[in-house]
Each structure stands twice: as structure tokens, then as C-alpha cells.
Image (cartoon, rainbow, N blue to C red; front, top):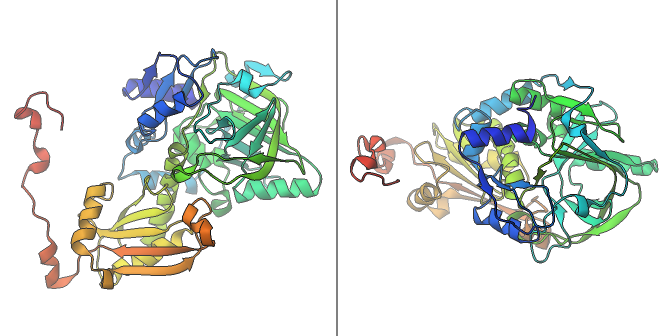
Length: 451
């Protein structure tokens, strides 16, 4: 269906007046990324004129939490349950004999940088990078589709280096390499909100086919077509699909690259993708993402499901926020309805145990807005005594994406219990409120003024 994948998403963004179109020519080297960063990667922008190319570029699609909710037809209160339902109840896909992504098929003289407007983002980046590509591989034992966002460094001609971090894809490549065989891959560009979210679910944890989770999220079967040169299936309404193989025993130096948390990642040899085919729609739109807010917000949404599920077993949890400022993995905020004196500390233990990536966690009461930096800081300032409310766990397992962890290979963990005490003392922490404040319409007093 035409409402699936990128063009359907752009139509919907237009309808809700969230798509910005840029008709001034931009250079894909630095300038395009600078514009996306100016808006903190929260503004979906379609660049209609890209220097040196006749192909438009879209970015900034997935960096705004509220837009993500609108596009998924959910809201803050319901999103966790919608996502959990889709993971628990995957739905079938629909296979087509043909689709728009096969309107153009290139198998000769493939030069990625000549064909596609692949941006360079930072001054220290080793090359231009495909940052929004969702890589699909097939589990040889189950036949299930595994998808994940991978960065791809353009090396030369039809060759890219790929950073393979997911355990399943990594293990599949190692198995093939031990057999001296290549691993087939396809890189999908031009997808939508459901497809990206499904790609962030852990195949190892849930054992699901991510295409089937996508079908459940969108409420209709995801429509697929076969690739041209590899034995894989891809969404029929993708804009661009790059097909190829990861040959065994072939590595290329990858990096540096301005990555998560705004630092340059390590330089290391990584596997290579040799491209055998590019399929694309007529008048394709190239999809990019300024590193790395877009992918990581969707990843954080799934981490929130996992954190909520963990805490739900321990305390009466109201909501959780795996924050964007904390890389959508290192910082977590949870609001609970405190019922016992130990609930705050129990929630800290549960949150830190929910993922090795969680480094700092703050537990607050339900009267605190966990999406407001001001409210969180207020709760810490007014409800925390360091000698009683801090939990420090030295030398825990952390994330290789966090620079201070790399200094020693271990990470100190910190929990802050910013909840109110129970009993009579709790009355001293009641917030002063103005009755009817939330219903105030400022335009009544100052016409035309925005809050």
C-alpha cells in the first residue's frame, strides 16, 4: 500500500503540518547535516535541492517524541502498551510479486557516492556515511528476518564498511566466515515510523520476526518483495534498497565517525559490504539521519518498554523515560506510586539491572513530570539527602558507546531516590498549586501570545 514506508509518512507529516521543505540548494558535505542539527534533529526536513544530485534528501524524521507518537497513532499514556502488544502478538506479512522499489534495478557500474547523495557530517569523519540504512539479514535456522540500523562507511565504488554490533548479525557473519562463505545483506532506505521501531526490538530477547512485529504495529500486513540478487525480502514501498554480500575474511578500517553523545568513535577494522545491486523507485528520496538522535530515540522507546516491564514486577510504576540527553540508554527516570519505604531503592536496583547500559537513574513520585528537566532537577534539589538517597555501585558493566567506560572497561552506577517519605512527613512535600492553572488560556489576557 502506498501509505506504507516513507512516502506515506511524508504525506501524513504534511497533513499534520510537521514537514519542513527546504528549496535552497544545500551541500551534502557538512551543510545538510548542519541544518538538521540546528533544529536538534527534531524537525522533519525534505531537502529538494542537493548540490551535485537530482535526488532529494529527507532527514530529521524520527527525533521528536511527540511527532513519533502522532505518527504511530498513540500517545504518552498508551504507547508502552501498544508496543508491548505488538511484540507479544506479531502479525503476518504480505508477499507481492512486484513493487515500486523494483521500478529501477542497477547491477552494473555501481558507484555509491556518484549515484546517491550520501552526506558527510563532521570535520573529522573518515568518509561519507549512510546513517539511516536498516540492514536486513535472515536467520538461517528459523528463517526470521532480523533488521537493525547500521552505519555504513563509503569506501570506494561499490564497497562499504559496516559496523556490525548486534549479536545475531555478528554471530551469523562469524558462522558464514568460518565456512568461508559470504553473508547476504540488504540495506533499506525510505521507511517509516513503524518499520524503524520494529527494527529496535531485540531478536535475541524476544525471538520474533521483526517484519511481523511491524505488521502488528501498523495494523496491516507489511508488504514485501524479493530482492534481485540476494535471497532476502524487503518492503515493497521502500525508496532504495542496496543489495550485497559481506565476504569472509575481508576487513576495512572504519572511522572515525561523530557518534553517540557527540564524540568520535574508535578507528578499527570492520567487515565490508560489496554491493551487487541497487533497486529504487522512480524519483527516489534518499533518507538520512544526523547522528544519532533519530535511531536512538526509537531505540529508547523500546528500552522504555523493557524498563517499565522490569519495574512493574517490583513497584507500582507509573511511567518511565529513557532520556534523549542521556543517549537514549544511559539515563533513566521513573515515576512510581510509593507504597513502602523501600520502594525508591528497589526501583533503583531494578532500573540498573534492566540493562547494562543504564548508568544513572532517578526515581521520583507521580507528581513529578519525568519529561521536564526542570521538574527532575527540582525533585533532586528538594527531596534528596545524599547520605541517605544515593545508591552507588562501583565497577559495573557498562556500554562501549560511552567514552568514560572505555577508560577502564567498567562503569560506576548511580541511583538517586528523589521520592517523598511516607507517613506524616509526606505532607511537608506537597506541592503548592493554583486551582484551575492548567485551564488558563493566556490569549484571553494577551491576544496572539504563544505560551
